Amino acid sequence: MDINITDMKEFLREQKPKVKESSIEAYYKALSSVKSNVGGFNNFTDYDLVIDKLSVYPSTTQNNYIMAILIVLEGFNQNKDYTELIYKYKQYRKTNQDKYMKDSQGNVKTEFQKQHDVSFEQVNTMIQRIGEDLKKRKLNRKGITLTPEDNTLLNQYTIFKILLETGDRNEVSDMVLMTPTAMKNLLETEKNKNYLVREKKGFTAHYFDHKMKGKTDKSSHTFSPELVKILRNLIRLKDIKIYDTLFTNSANTPITRNQISQILANASKKYIGKSVGSRVIRHLVITKEKEPFVEVEKELNEKKEALAKKHGHSVFTMDKIYDDN
Image (cartoon, rainbow, N blue to C red; front, top):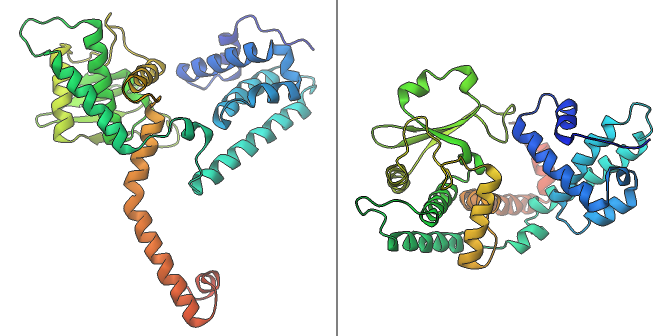
């Protein structure tokens, strides 16, 4: 059976009617890339060719492409022609996922992490350099109009500061400025965006549209005094009003999540010669936040090993038999 799709986005919407439009866009991008990579939809049926073409990518990227392939094959599987092939792709995808989880738990760096290997301190120093370049532009002068370069640098600095403090993803892309009253009266239909609420002493971020949407409730958090000052500066310099989107380009068009990734990558390549995005920063932030727990766990394991040795059995036996909790 020939695989012929005239309108990829419409096809994806039909196959995934419950997913949000941003996910459709992500599927579309993956599907367009993998189609071009392997030479057309019909080559999706050549498993060995596809795997060979995808082998140059990190396992997570491979899985994104394979997910797009599976959507197509399942959409054309009315006669069960592709059932076995679908199973093979799913098994390959599962093997990638299992390996990724195992490597993550064992602190083994993935190829992606090796290519983007930076420390928390390096990123922090890079952000300080961006901040210094921002100061040199003297944007606080009266009557100044932001140039496209000013706007980009201001966005880069503020977004990097938010990510390094919070470990958030790219959800800040569509963040809208709100008052506490407006937030309190938010309609259900408006709970598809993310909001920054301006309060008397600071700001609170409320995330409705995030990666774990549907699995966890909305998340919210406040910011440090330093970040509050930076956010106030952004709002003042860009003349952001209530209900305006925080991060926009020089034409005042809201920046998408993919564009934020590009903005961050461009900045980090310029300042430290490596591509650093929200994913890398999130990994650094969470790893740093986990450090105290890792030390406690290490100390506890050492005490348990000593206790098990004292009584002549293994830690496993001690935990399994001598535990009344």
